[in-house]
Length: 168
Length: 391
Image (cartoon, rainbow over all chains, first blue to last red; front, side, top):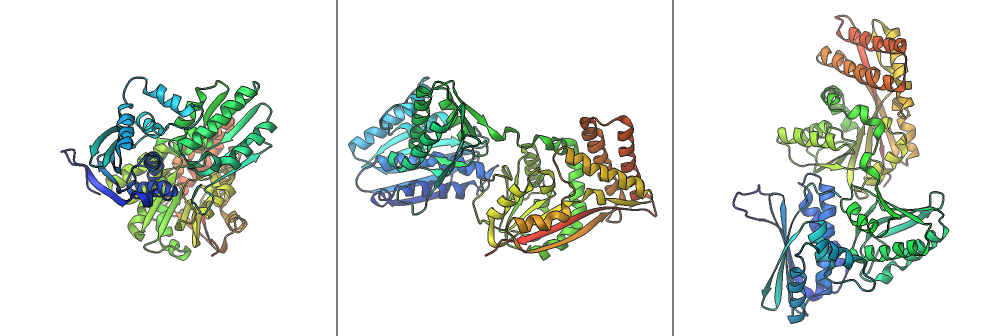
């Protein structure tokens, strides 16, 4: 793995590209992909086991969100890159209008001083879970910064987070 | 969980301790995938009086749906049973769990979250102080002279996947890395300060590729069947239940791989001249450790422990670190540090009187005298044992 560069360059670590229909055919792919990514990118972190656990938890929530909210056709791309202690997860998700609106709204919902209260409310709300709760969790519990970009028939969701030294 | 061809989590209820444990990975797609867990949870709560303990120390993964489902049942139980208290036991080793479950604590004052491993083994604090670190390095330097040749007889060779459990300050892992070039080397310890030191030493020597990991040797998060060789040196003897650690060493070892342990029999430390005083002191050292729940006489018992843990093809030998291994002053420095900790701290904490303490110290000084005497001999015996995990 490369050393951190001064110019803020995020060095690519791992990338996977697969048909969204294939991904959405099996729920366990969320767990398997997040666990595989986590193991591959954690070996040189201060505590590889702790880092892998945290990264797997974070990426799994994003992949579960994608599993539940995506367009009918196209490719899902998941890329992880790193600058110093900061990891960037980029998900390109096939989306129609309504799915695109969901991601735009979910990211817009991640600002404000009451974000922690909104996360707790979503977590303990009776009835079905809000599909955006995973993004809220990453923003609150993992200190992740999000951005979303509309693309033709897709969105690009970016989460940046620093997991080194992050213990409960 | 859905589409998995094997169960990813287990739950069990220990009625004696009113403790419900969830182990593994819980990432369901649908709530109904947790039906067996929630049925068991509700049935367990119904049996409880007072405090219900939920042990999630080994719950590695939990998605929001599973958390939401568990939380709903626990909050409801508190609402229906005003006398019920719930204590959730998390582990800092997992990373996410304490923070996640603390959110639940905020919903109801009768739900509490305790982080079990914030202080794993308080009795060992004597052995983890910063002042003891230089002497640990000297000890490893002196034992390595022997172990470098012994290890291949116990399965060590180049290119193995190795775990060094209870790695302490990590110097053994560095020596193994240099000498045997493992394909993977994980070094685990429960002391963050020791691990910080280990990482610094590895960095100073420009060594990359050792994964220093924080964890409880008796309850590791490392996966099953991962390592060709698992080492655990001078550590079974300072845990009150070594069989729990051996069970974990067995679990992470690959079938056909070996687990290698070293331990002492402190009362067999010896020296000439002044043998009698030396022998008295080390016999008392063994009793002193026993007072704090540690068995520094464990060395010769290693064979039994390994066989009882399920290993076969057990191999065993012993070696003696002596004042004739290199510089006698190194040996003397080790003894002096033992005196400082054992007589200076442990004996004092046990409440020994001054006369006893003086005599205890005298034995160490006599051992140093023997080590540095031009015609003297001083020894520190160590037992090596390894067992194969059956195929």
